[in-house]
Image (tube, rainbow, N blue to C red; front, side):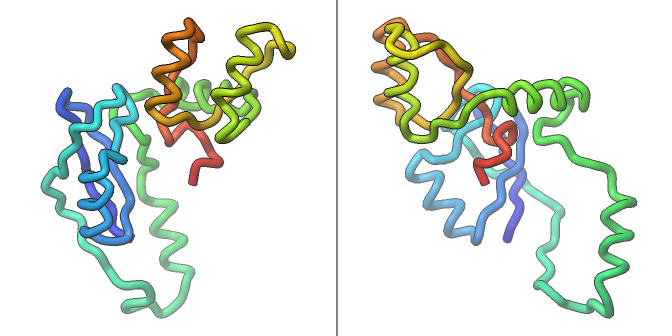
Length: 151
């Protein structure tokens, strides 16, 4: 796994995890990389001082790695976002029902009072999101780091 430091055209910095440099390029070319703050697809790699170490290289045991992990500071998904705000956002997301790819269908049912209102989340393509918006159905995009089951 390679971790790249990324930035959108609006200057929002975040990181992305990729299987390879080629995987990053493929996702970028397919406009699959989206800024978690503003949904901008104009994403670029930033220079990084990180070094990729192959799994198991120079390890004597797993214990030192666990100690190192405890000493390292916790990194928030978005630099500058207070930990308490991030925790509250994650709690709000946990209180929603993940309807997956059925999101457009479920959102319509709720909007048109065909089913009881409830907090939901899921996935929608750009076209589906545009259609929902055109119908006056209000929703918001969630950055991937907020949804624990998106990985």
